[in-house]
Length: 217
Image (cartoon, rainbow, N blue to C red; front, top):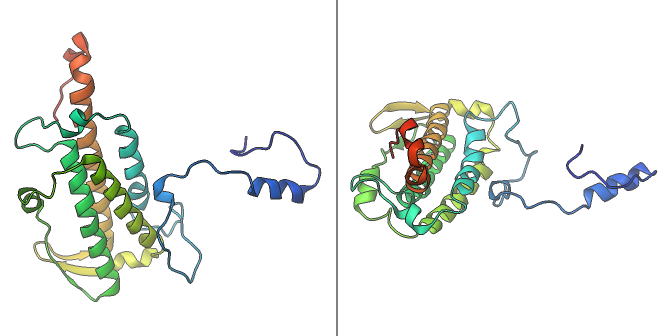
């Protein structure tokens, strides 16, 4: 059954198409609302065979995190399992900040010839207090920054993956390698957020079922 199937049949096919196109759409996830898009060619989608590696993961990550944390309390967002471990809020702040780092690197690799890429020091950002603040605001900022990244990345052809840079610690890298790290980084923090959330919210109330699980928040 079509997603927006009509409740009645109209003999005139053109009329059917007209009504179909003018039916109200459901709310669209933030990631599908692109920022100002460049002109000059048809838009590529995540299903295109020319999509850069990891693009589909980058599209879904903010949606997944928003769904997981939909009903999260302030306690769950600020809870730290140990003084040297991050809270969910701190993870969200990290994601928001590092998103701009990934995007800036990718853009320079496409627009410049073998640019020099500096290593990112997350410990310095944490020590400087940039991971404190309102977790929900960090999530909003991450969603916004990721939306900007996606709006630019979706227009890159697969051939752009061969573009190179020189990392200050790793040496020569390609855009394909950066894209794979970007998606890998996303999935690692989805797992981290999930583990923190389930350990704080659900595990304490599981009673005897706790014996079946080992938590590592």
